[in-house]
Image 1 (cartoon, rainbow, N blue to C red):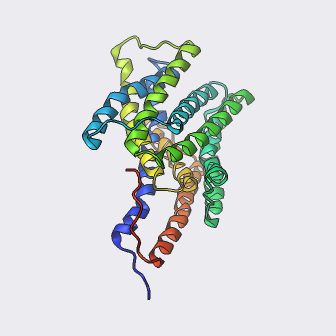
Image 2 (tube, helix red, strand yellow):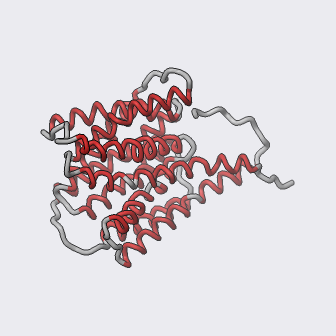
Length: 314
């Protein structure tokens, strides 16, 4: 007897990837906001105020939605927050020593490495089609990042900083996944942001950047990033990680450079070359291929006798 999967079950399977995709779109706005704020603040200070401005907004949302106090913070959230703040810091520093293309491509490799890390540490063995999706998505990321006009300074030190940022991305997503297995999405994003603000404040002090802009208008870019990238982007990603295998999540988040490139094309009149356009298409194809695992999971679930699903964090 064949089993037809209820529409509600289908929606649940696709909810996690959809949240991740929307979160990746929001995070894709981060380089744009950063670029528009560099006239008033340094990159580390912009990141610091991005987190600080997000905290009161997250607290209001938390109380309005959860109607309770936050759950006690755990080590996974703290570790993830520290790694994320270090990722942003290393990437920004790397950009000062190497080309944007090199730094962007290397950092995005971290989204792929998270699949192997989850396989090793979380025993989440990727589906065979995931490896094909990785090859397609990496080829697309290389074409999108490196296929533009040549030029700009390159320095192995900048490339190494970007590589360090890639490892931080992998660790951040892995620990965030562990945190989401234990806490609700609102608890995780709130504690993450608080940890990131503290870490970023230390980084600003060490780097020697000034904390305050010359005028109040200098806070516009961090405020925009707090809403779009921190609450919208990172919040949706954390929510999606609780419902999606880490390996699949890493590929989905490669939508970020595609969005950033598309907006830069329109906003800063930076048209894509044919190679870059093809790279963006390959990334989208890789994201689509990565959903083969979700489709297989849905088919297996529909073939099993119905069981009461275990309650997972919201």
